[in-house]
Image (cartoon, rainbow, N blue to C red; front, side):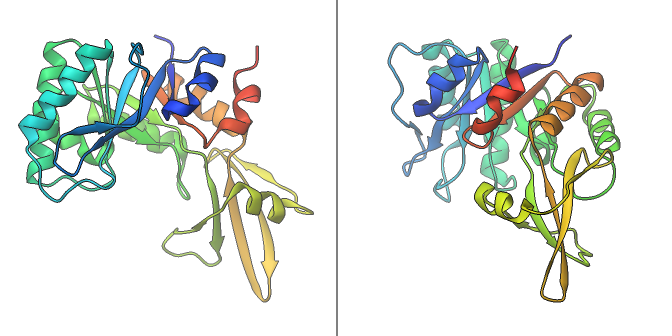
Length: 254
């Protein structure tokens, strides 16, 4: 089965999604202050795609069953093929209950459900999102081991664009995120190399008496990561706008 690539985008970016004929994940949904489903303005006629729900700004407590009903109703109203859970916080009693309820309901309706890796224990059926961004080890091993760990459920690639600056030595592997403008500035005069292990490009530079290691993605490295995911049996992959907007032409040109 070929890898299905989704482009996650806010409503004001849907024109770009359509231009590249990719199925959308509508990054428009959140948990309102009353615990009910809320969204950015979407065209009333919009149908299809995936609904992406974030927990950014969510209240401390909310009713899992009520939010589940809201989201299932919205799936039916929009003829959505499923839901992506874009939750940054780890599960707690309420949110884990919500994920389990939604997992069962979407399974009954034969809709898809994608959850972050940390949420995998909360669901029985949902496809598990595995992040592509690593700063150590081997990407192939990471993706293969993660897919085996969540089996028999399928895995999907959360294809994040790397742009990180690491001050060496970096024993904890934590770097500082770079804006694309800052990345371009640092790259001037530096030779970049490709790391097959990490699946990304890198270069080093000096600042004072310290050495910095910069790890970043471009269209070619993202394309290779998508190909690797397909080779390893991943069913789907997600790219995020506007994160990759400047790379779309090179990524998906004929």
